[in-house]
Image (tube, rainbow, N blue to C red; front, side):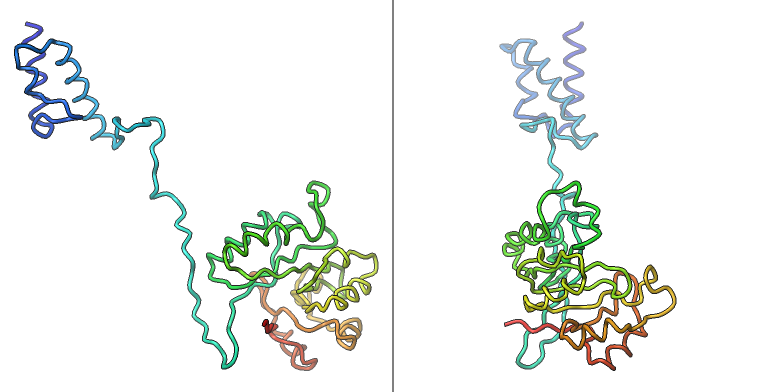
Length: 270
């Protein structure tokens, strides 16, 4: 009686499972007189596993049943294409010259900034971690050049132009300034901010006044101070940032026009 019940169970399972073929076990083989009941039990077990696989979507016959790969959840790392025409005689590059990492008040590792730039369709970036008022210095090693040095090999691999830079971070006036195309950011870490501008200028830096209408330092106006005139006359101020994150500063356009500052700063690279 047990054998008869087992036979009917196997028969029912086999009819509804691809004509009795699952995991290379043939249902017809159990009706041959020479096969033992162990083959029938194996066949039933295989059928049950097949049904579980069909209902759950998990292939129980995979080599590693405990690690199923799901490539559909992987980041496809697609690069956004930004279409901006070239100017006759020049190549137009899409750039971001103001960003931070964990080496100042950013929240990501320097190589992540490179990946973000690549995915956003940029051609060139400058990592400009704060030189002063850096909350991470007590937790991380390295110096003011570390973020550039860590990111540089990955930028080369991603074909992203990486510019060495740093942000001179002082109270208003003069406020915050990005110095680009530096050779050594550490030399800008000085008690007197005028010495920092001098060190940047001696390295041939391109210096930009950041977020001139930032409410944390200029809550009611975008004020041009005497120190800004001094920096301009010394050749230590070349541009002004009119857009930062989710803010733009309309009144700064008048400042740039009056003082012949670049807006936004175009940079020509060989």
